[in-house]
Amino acid sequence: ESEKRMFAIKPMNCPGAIEIFKNRQRSYKDLPLRLAEFGHDVRNEPSGTLHGVMRIRGFVQDDAHIFCTEDQLGSEVAKFCKLLKKVYHDFGFDKLVVKFSTMPEDHVGDLATWERAEKQLSDACHEAGLEYEIQPGEGAFYGPKLEFKLYDCLGREWQCGTIQVDYQLPSAERLDATYIGADNQKHHPVMLHRAVLGSFERFLGILIENFAGAFPTWLAFEQVAVVPVSNEFDDYAKKVNDVLVAADIRSNVYLSEENMKAKIKDISQSHRTPYILVVGQKEKDEESVCVRYRFSSKKPQETMKLADFVKYVQDKVETHFIGI
Ligand SMILES: [Zn+2]
Image 1 (spheres, protein in one colour):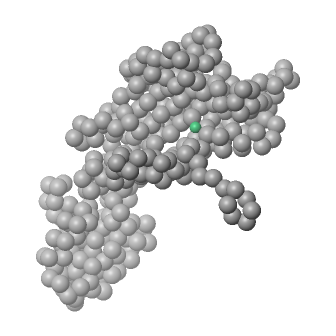
Image 2 (image 1 turned 180 degrees about the vertical axis):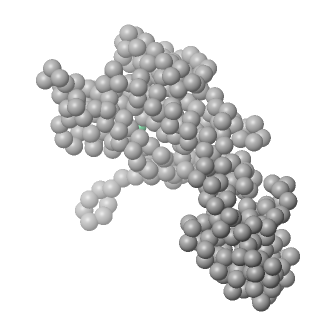
Image 3 (image 1 turned 120 degrees about the vertical axis):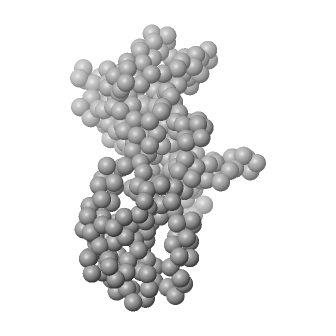
């Protein structure tokens, strides 16, 4: 309680999305209505099951709820499947397994509706070029669902994305969400619950595991480290760093009394920085940089004009290149 009002913490975002939908009278012209949020949820998981960032009691879901008509169901699911494939591709996860959970024994709603919904889900998968495995009877009591599993570099399976068809929450018996149809009558929309990454915390954990901390350039928290061979070249190192930062590259300059070799070892081992730029007299004279690629990339070091290096990094970032 605070200032004579009761507050509560939420384990999911769905009822909130319905409240927003019901905030005013909706029309069929408003559909499909897609409400996205980074929803902060809290769940009282048993302490013994908590595990790093993989399972925590407070997390943020990349959640969305789509309100649509039954006719729009297929195209909305297909759009989502394409989005998910694109996002996973950007993170380097191209092997995907889709699990299709069908009507459980204990369900609400009539058989014909279930069959139509299941057909729309399977058509949507085909349209997005995704094959699936059926999990008979594993759907939620309110509708069928798709679950998307990805594989990390060690072949471990992670379930992240999901899309669920829900006829129940918007129904008159539950939260009673309605829209006015073309026939001027009230109808209940179909609700889709969907997340691409699942929870940000867990997905970040999966990424750290998958890349063993050696992130591709576009994801690395420090993309470039600039190291002068001696204090004499501090000014040129700072200038290089300024040029990189101005080009939206996450760069840091390391000026210290420590010897250069120890510095480079520390940066490459603890930061896993993709590129370490070593600069001295030759580089200063030529407006160039000596690029040392992260040890795991096995690329030999090379000297480049500073302007060319900027373009090189920008290209890796823009194309979400998985590598350095
Ligand atoms: Zn939901």
